[in-house]
Length: 139
Image (cartoon, rainbow, N blue to C red; front, top):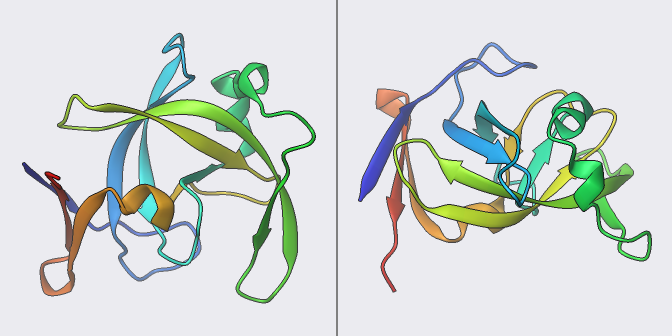
């Protein structure tokens, strides 16, 4: 199965970029929200979201212990300590729900899908068409 999404303008740029439409939830699917998520292959994690969305989904109730600390490194080499929790994600147009690790940081302003999440799919950036195509890999 293939899903296609149009590029959008990101928060910090005027250049169209690849986005997926996702439905994000806590791991018990009590609260959910539909969001546009920027594909960022430079982010190693699964999903990074702004703190207001993290709070809206009550992900603090599903946070990992203080022993488990994720560190992100920015393009400029700055190290950021992330808060992390379990959550679930569904790609709009497909019924598969996946439990993932959701990270947040106070400086995050946009929902970002990282490489760890994308590795489960065949992802095609169709730059001339300003579209991203996600294919569900069959193993």
